Length: 256
Ligand code: NAI
View 1: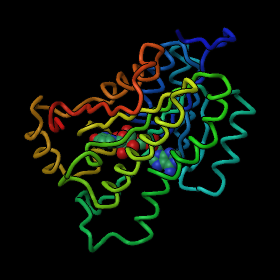
View 2 (view 1 turned 90 degrees about the vertical axis):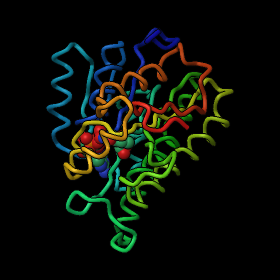
View 3 (view 1 turned 180 degrees about the vertical axis):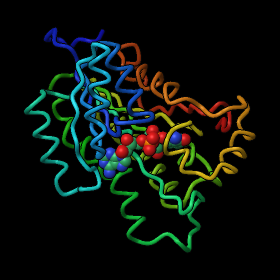
View 4 (view 1 turned 90 degrees about the horizontal axis):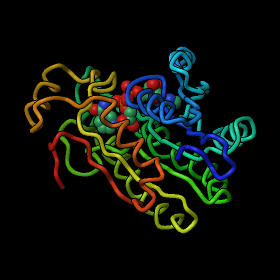
């Protein structure tokens, strides 16, 4: 069911929706009948939204830098007053700085980079959840899907300390919110991608990606749409009893 109790189409806010996994999440949720709000710091989100509108999807672009923590709560409130309750929040935007395409070793990670990674990967999902969950609780229905990473689940040689720590924080935050809000009809889950072929992955050196591919039993990198299909499922009515879960989508590279 893609409609709320009012009969109105559900609204999904997807962050980092201009490209990669976020774009595919917006496309899938839109094709499932949701109104999609596509948030990104890149001005290309305007073109991304018009691509989805060409597919008959009700998509609106929101240009916003999630690293700007001080304005996020207010912007989230103004998004709600403009578009109504966001029934679904997909915290997808994430960054992973890699100097010259290689994993940053501990000695080269500056405090400024560490804080930037945490602002985008952890603080923004926290502030958006804080701003948007109360209206989901009021409507007795909501879905929060946080995009974590295999690097937050286990050791990853391809991830920096800042990135790995931030994704583990996303998993911990999601668990807490899942426990607190399920009784109000709001579920909180994570999808933990392995190596997915997107612009973010392509910031890695070719040799790094090739050695990653060899470690994946499926013998290939994943597709953004393969993450989006898990997000679509977790956002649906069918997933109402899945709460506090982590779906690993990694071709079998890590099996828990
Ligand atoms: P991507 O780099 O292709 O797309 C990320 C999008 O987020 C871009 O459109 C970018 O403009 C936007 N974004 C980045 N910083 C932002 C900010 N401060 N404010 C607003 N928007 C911002 O990345 P991809 O691969 O689609 O990654 C999406 C999520 O999946 C991230 O959280 C990433 O950590 C996670 N992930 C990706 C993996 C991969 O192999 N591609 C593996 C594991 C996790």
